[in-house]
Amino acid sequence: MIILASASPRRRELLEQIGEEFVVKVSEAEEVRSAHSPMELVAENAKRKALAVANGNNNNNYPVLGADTVVVLDGKIYGKPKDEGDARRMLQSFSGRTHEVLTGICIVKEKKIYVKTVRTEVTFGEMTDDEINAYIATKEPMDKAGAYAVQGKAARFIKNVNGSFSNVVGLPLYELNELLKKI
Image 1 (cartoon, rainbow, N blue to C red):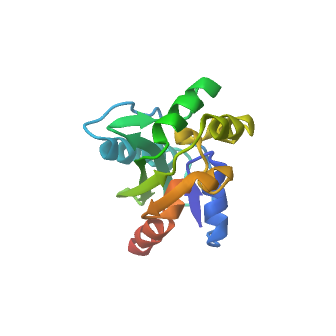
Image 2: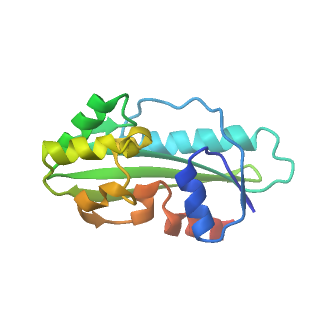
């Protein structure tokens, strides 16, 4: 049994997919917005989320999992789009290019902290403005980092994924499993 310190429905789906027993306790930790690098940023935010829940009411001493995912292109971090125009700008930036999806995962168990960061490259094919507008009209991009869901309707635009597919969805399952083995 683990405690998931996240409200993400995608992370819940991924944990269910691998048969992991978990409960959700959403972390109220304040995320940092800048760090020396995007990798350090996701690691720090994952750690903050896990510690906020672990230091709360974790009476059963279950491991607490925190995670943070960002999309990075040319050193710029792309979060969730503010509106349709923002989603359009993001998707136009990714068209025909390769970007990175970075996730930090942290498990806190008995005051021990285990952190791992995962990097996956995603290459989009060229997208027309009509294709981008039609995708935005589905509303799918509006609550996703980078304004797309690799496991959803945006799959038609994805030319290549180099690395962990589940990382792009929001939780690198192999690396999570490796951390869980350590505890």
